Image 1 (tube, rainbow, N blue to C red):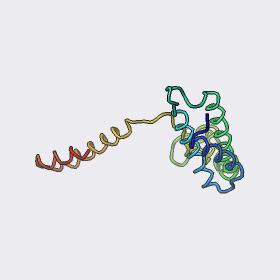
Image 2: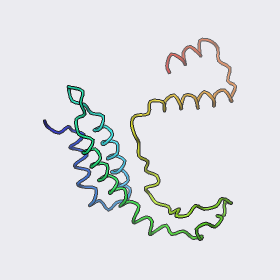
Image 3: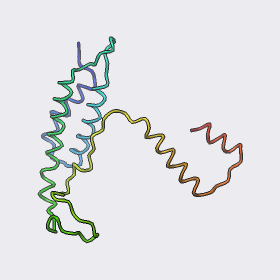
Amino acid sequence: MGMSKTEVNLKRLLVTAPQQQNQAKLIHYVATLRELLEQLAEERNPDGLPRISKAKVNEYAENIEAVAAKLAVPTSDVHTPKEPEGEISSSGTPKAEGSVNSASEGLRRRFGVHSNNEEKSRDTIDSDQSSAAVKLDDAARTHIEKHR
């Protein structure tokens, strides 16, 4: 059985990521790798079985996290805390111990497709619109509902 396009792209990125020196590109690589791994884990063969084993998915995940860890190393040297740990910062909130700013904090691991994101955004939009108190006639409301 051959490799899927997703797996080929994942392997190529895993090979090239360690040589990448540009931090912005490396962040993009990690995000793309995580998306590809998610897609690959969801792929099924015609029999309905997973295309690759969980062990292989875990191996890829470890490799991706190793690349993400490379992101954290150079930036933690640059961002040294100016205040002692455990002190109260200028904003008035106590600082947590070991709070080092790193680029990998902005990278979140996503598990599965979240279909309720659209519903959450609709709820947010609805609550924003209700606070604005815009009056719509029935034709406008049906038109809006039709296009949601």
